[in-house]
Image (cartoon, rainbow, N blue to C red; front, side):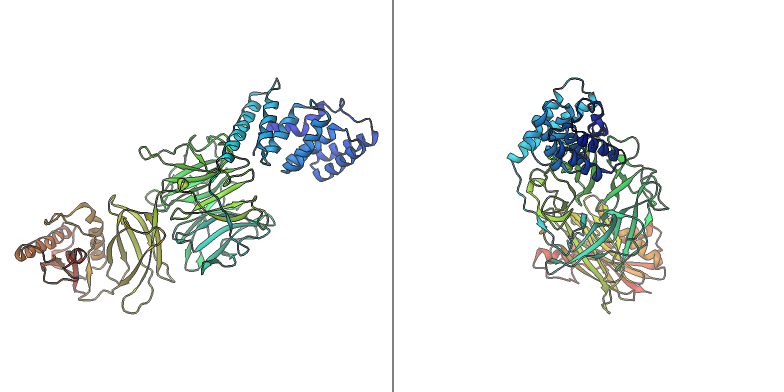
Length: 633
């Protein structure tokens, strides 16, 4: 638990006012105590502790020496030993120093002894003459103690699983991220004060031995850490500190994966990076909003969470502080925006918690899209130790986080657990596919675009993997999407699919064979829509029509026939007329968008060329279609 700088200084050096009054009658003990104070002034704390232990061995009632030892242990983040020595001071002289109760209470809070911590904080605040700053700090800790006592009475379901020695070591492992399919884990490891990225792949349900992510990213000179990976595993935002091209102490960088290799990282620049400290990025699933932590002026507290939006042209908007519903006068860190784009997880020592940093969840207000007051994830997910770096799988069921308080392999280890239902994000799933040449079966790197048909907005726009032809995208369940795939020299591919009844623990898998451009080649325009029994284009058709326009502009020698088809229901003559009217509507749309009429023809085929069985609704739906066919190349 972070205390104010003022109280830290007071605790370690307040004894100067009491040293004459509380000196030992034992000259040897007093000499050892003086040597300890000298070592403290040089920050030689180990030597100071040795001298203080000598002093109290010579004088068992040497309160000032016990106090000084407690303060040093507390400064060294050893609350257990600090507590032992503060209690010794109070045993010898309960009114030796009011700040003893503060130091003891904070040490008790940081070891989970909430009841005693509450009593001693209340004892300390009862003394007259406390500054307003001190009172605010203590009142905050009193609130933490009361919250913790209630949280322990109402534990949440929590069964953490250590990810094992293929990932965790005696070093520090933290800030994990996983791809949408949960098959690739990337995390930060700190060894010998150097932070680097490591990767593990899940095979047959187990994580492989972690390996250095990339020599293009990891260096022996700089610290690389605090990463965020896009759900498809292609882009990674992360932090590098003290690099020559940096704008401040720590900046955010970006690297792209091409096959198995990662590009040389580049600084994403202003206005996200400043002369201050920017770190711990989290990119939204659509790649359009970056959340991160900054110490820039104008924030609510020390470390605040900000967001910046990607603008047309590739630049970033001026970062926006998430405000007092998320940020406090203390520290908020490790943001993770779930692919639902509605749920934010982060760590904080400002909101009521159980000690050090706790994990919290905040959800967007559905009406005004502001962030709601955070909810502590509860005990025993949070403890008196440090919990940080929480991420949630795309399906919302599994959480990954780092903790130093679960008897792991050493320091911070990475764990997973089933997230309680009330702490889960909105339902999302993911689409996974591969693109290949229809004839040769060779994998292709093609442009893949996925459109949310209800909002007519792009949710994914990327190139499939150059080595595998694969792509992966997360998106909200319960909606219908258009998929368009294109590559130079090939006919583009069109499909629409629904995730309304999808199983969230299973991806929507699709194989995409692309045809080379040749006379007779045909594409079904699955994302062109008309009103029922009419030939008026619906608005959601515009994206696909623009793709067709782009295709014709990119291939100016090509001529095409636009063909309309219907199912077998209704009057045959009316179906023929409807199919031709729909084909003509598309034809006219292309001409109105400057495609030469000499390159276009149209025809209605009615029910004469079915591609599926008309005895089922699904079959009839497939037969009601618009196509284009290459007539000249």
